[in-house]
Image 1 (spheres, one colour):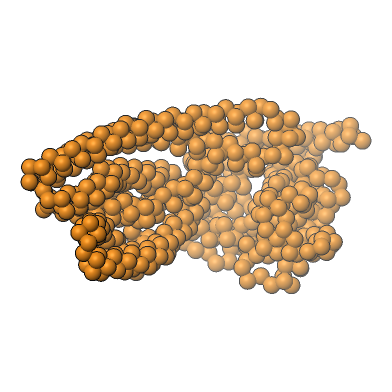
Image 2 (cartoon, one colour):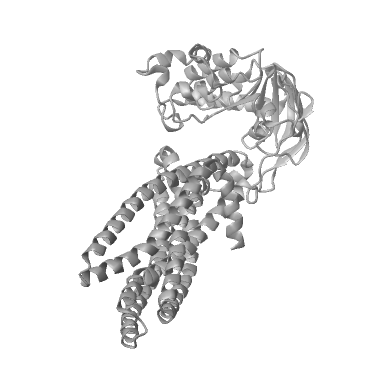
Length: 581
């Protein structure tokens, strides 16, 4: 109970904006309680007036019942409208807040978890939190109504009251056992559902690679195995529910038969008038069914609410995942100087990726990092963007420790363009507006011209309003990279990082991207991770990275002359190119 109250308070913080709708819900619930108690009494009077031929009172009673029913119908519409206002508002606000907090989670923690886990929390779990104030409110209203009816029966006849109470307690105990067993099955089902959802997401996102790898059968075997397991969990959960529902139904049937016998005995013993017996009997569907159902449903709702609350607030309150931390210093206009000083870093496997890494880069320089795969090149870029935290040493931007800078100073001044940049399922124009909301059409066209993409866009039927599909599927690899470069022009950050941006492109496309990069030189600090050494000959400086350390610094010509590992890399590339020819 304490856990529920704590979670309710947390969710209600999001409901403060919609308190008028919540108060309207509460008013409607009070009306429903009154109606549920009064209508059966009026119905029994209606039946007595009919059997006693008292038509005038029958007419007025029927008119009163009609008026109450119409009023109740309007109240129900009013309730549903305000319920939706409250439900929609709270769910939306929690989802937005949760989305923001997920973006703050450290990349290392994101790497360890499936996409499905976060999708479930933003979707179904946030809706579950709001349900407690909609479905839950309905269950509570039903409970309060039944308590009122119990009081009415107690006033009419204490023996009938004790009978109802005994049967209701038996039914409620059965329901409590059902809820406990059902929720255990539900927890197992949710865990499997997270895993299956994650795999399904991977199926959609990786459909092209699955096809090209000819991995359809093995991937579908894994999905089928998890879907079957999910189905079994669901089957087990529903069977548990059905078995208990059958037992409850049998108890209800026997209890109703016992009630008839009891009322006959009370009437024969002159302990209960026929009119009162009709009223007591008319309450049976509520006291032998509703109270038990509402208790069980409410407990089930509260259990689901607490499970979802724990999953959502574990993110909102930093209990389950590590959140990124930044300093408070803000640099409005970064110059673009970088320094790594004895930096150590390793991923979760414990193997060092960077080992005492040290180097300096001056503003407006174009610098390349080369080396074999796994040498630590991409990790340098990730650490510059503070996607991961270093274990030892210091990283400085413009002479300031990166840990002292706020998020905007770092990520608002750095653009990274990868070999496979993520392009959103929006129009070309909207993809570019993501980095600058107030960007003009003229700025968009100029950025695309500098990125050597404008000619292609003009050939499209919808031009800049063309929807590019998920991950920019309608664009080629080179076009996606040039669109990412156009984003860099619009974002206008002082520092631009190219992570093997031309490694898998044909010569013509590579030439266009090289031209786009050349358009950036001298005005920006440009860092390039190069797969093809021929593309970085004109860089001001080249760093050779080996085993997480700098093993050579200089221009292309200097390294060819003085650095044997670099010379071997270059000669190996030439040999590979010759073989292709």
